[in-house]
Image 1 (cartoon, rainbow, N blue to C red):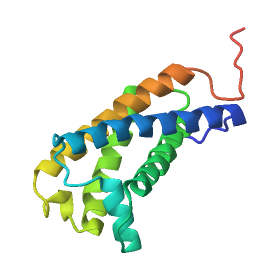
Image 2: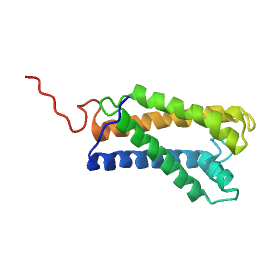
Image 3: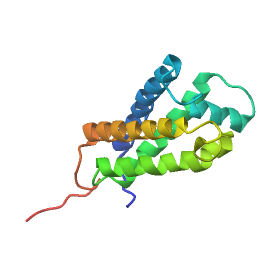
Length: 159
């Protein structure tokens, strides 16, 4: 895993991939919550923001936290895995982020390790949302940048 110096245009595209990934995920999660299908009792990013600030906040604040978080990690994926934007690497990142949610964020929010303070259903919700993150991130990055290419700014001759 290496840091790749992308051009300004490539960084903007990576940010676009992150924002679009977060918008698609947010639309799925909010729809699931409002329809009663989601195993989550509330939007994780909103509960996190409310816990952080110690007050009730409107849903758009939670969505902004989500957009920032997903965009950061999407840019990380593009910058560090530039030479091979594979599904396996997106899935590995998603597993790492799910573990972070279960072990750090859920306890911080008062949901307990793995969300067991709320119930085992949140584990399923967390795994499904992170699987969707991996799929959407990989698909959008592949569509935007292609799956395998030379490092940014370098050309290799095969002469």
